[in-house]
Length: 203
Image: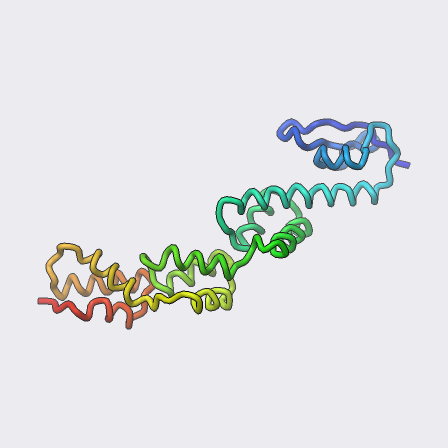
């Protein structure tokens, strides 16, 4: 039966160790996992059992990292997935973590969308907001669900942004046209941009 021939603390992470079987590197795992499961030097091991311990160790460590990652503010499912993949965890481990986080309600793309909309509604329109959310991996239905819970139609936000953009500039057709294009670029609809400028008459 294979024998554990070396256990050494990793140089870059003193909470993890490398395990060698029959003189060759076999895997890395958290020291907590090694202690909990009594992994010892000179111990005979079953490879399948050791592989299972590694999987459990990676799942635990990845879940801890993911929890720390989202502790300061909400993240989308895609953001968490990409973060863990960059940390070197396997797809299997990553999806295990995501399922757990969703189970604990730590990942909720609809709630993320609602908070994001509330934070940006005063400076950009729905079209741009939807685009940015989709780039973060949020599904269209979660975005639409979030918008159903908001009261702002976008008209008043567009009006405030138009006023700020015009500032002390003379109200000319040219400046109004520039502001109109600015609003469209900010993700407001043509109707919202028109509403925002309806009280102005350019020279």
